[in-house]
Length: 499
Image (cartoon, rainbow, N blue to C red; front, side, top):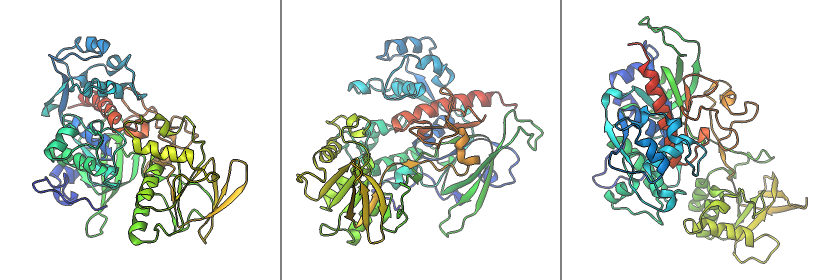
């Protein structure tokens, strides 16, 4: 996706083309002939990968000596080890007793240190101060398909983030402060996806992390075996990983790379593979899985206020975004979903109305406008508890209603927005054996990768870590705790490596 033009004076992209921007050690490690394994390879350059790179680059968090945390139990624990980096403390002990909007204790801990009272409406500054201690840095490489920021570069730039803008920030560079420098403001305390994607690129540049990042890197295989000796004769205590893939170059060539690493961190997110309905006709050319398809159809004039309606399938925020987009351009829409509108599991029932008025408007439309009632919202039809059975070549959509009756509608375009799955096809068995329940498909919400909660190392494979949505941490605000846990574990592990 083309990036928006940079404003005057803005820094360029954080990562130059990999073929010309690598230092010698990067060139050596990207070739198959490297004899000494890299300590860490991170697969994925979104917020999780960026935050982990920051922590592995020697940026070390300490608690400010003159600041009291509003959580009394945490404050008492923090005073027990003055002058000791958070990375060197017992994360299990520090995070005990914390509660919040996340299941991960370390995620709650790091969030509480970065944003002490944000859940209570406060704006207290972080209790952390950061010291750049280069001697603590661990050599690593971050591989990503996109520019730093990952999937944020694939989201429509004008869309507003679900989370508050301040919650999208990474350590030691507040989003609000960064946007003020760019003379931008937060809309209803939220930022646009384009701003956030640009912020992540800029973060990598400002923090001097660019030399660790390789953009346009597609990983095709990760393999591991038993501990081996390197060419120097030193025996490594854990398994060695072989990371293989190719680089995407401007000249359309795909030069291969192969990396040897002592540790691999999976930070790929879950937006790689859209979920499908598994019904006849789903492969027809008018069926799509991204909002951008509707945007393109509007621009091309293939859907318009006079066309057949767009069918939007799903009851999550992506589907709501599509409804809002269609309403904005007066495109008729049929909105179908399997759940009842009052289902407490619907995300709309979990969002504060004051912060998210547009999503609550969609939920109101879903409630008030079913196909059987007079339409208070012209051009919009809601089909709660309807199952899409079949799509025909003549653009007919066949549904089954709650009573088992079939209904048929003519549609111009179909958007299936029912979530997505991680693409871990580069792992043995596509990573299925790493999940909490190896007999069920890997799912960020229902069956994430099984990791130790205080190191984020896989419980099934030594040296393999996972962070972010792959382990159930779905908001940027909370993925950073995973990075803290991994960095703490790797620092301890690398300290034990033979010289």
